[in-house]
Image (cartoon, rainbow, N blue to C red; front, side, top):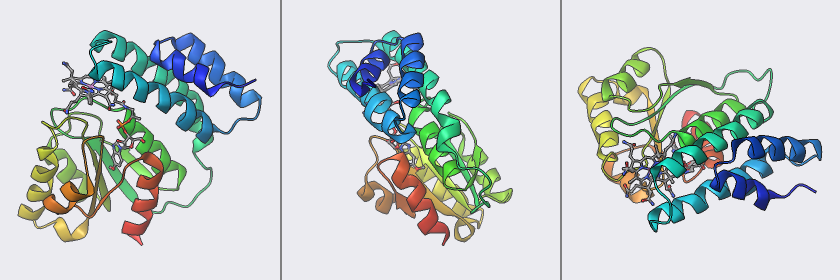
Length: 209
Ligand code: B1M
């Protein structure tokens, strides 16, 4: 029987092949892609984050786990995306300059696509100029992700650059990532903040309405 805990443990242990196998088995047994993502893969990565914080594992283990997580999300991606949905709008997402964490950003991108948005993924370590360029190219929403307290200020830098270029009124700005709070979003003048990928998609819908 599908075991979400086993999937979480396989992510924690960086066992890519086991993740691949268990995710496929769970799908064959009829478990929903959202359940596998939230109760298996994300739980594993969150547990590993705690172990990393406590000095029980180091960067190499985290990197291997990130690859195992990706193997799982790659299988789930087509199932989380709805087909033939008319685009709700164009969202450019990216992890801010100086920050290489992309697992959360990729999940947000997947959920946005799944909810009918056209997603332009700018990648990681994205300079403010690139977000601004995306707005010039028609993005109606920009979504910034930051996982490091040291890179959070880049979100403010992007908003300031949008203002300097006279583009702030043309675009909605949403932000997220583990260290981000609603208070921080208010402080830097972002239009919205969300704690997870599913609510990021709901937020984008509200912002664009
Ligand atoms: Co790094 N890392 N890391 N790391 N890493 C953290 C973030 C850290 C909290 C670990 C810790 O100490 N407990 C810590 C930051 C401390 C701080 O700033 N306060 C940390 C550190 C210190 C570092 C390095 C500096 C370590 C070093 O080199 N000594 C280094 C920095 C590199 C850099 O970016 N310049 C580093 C490197 C790495 C790896 C490369 C090894 C790897 C990243 C691999 C990758 O992303 N491809 C990694 C990882 C995996 C983590 C942890 C363990 C897990 C992050 C993750 O993927 N979580 C993390 C610990 C933790 O967060 N608990 C940690 C799972 C993911 C699904 O959640 O990303 O939070 P998350 O995304 C969520 C929400 O936040 C939200 O929705 C997502 C899905 O629900 N969300 C948004 C995210 N973006 C959003 C955007 C939105 C809306 C919602 O709107 C646009």
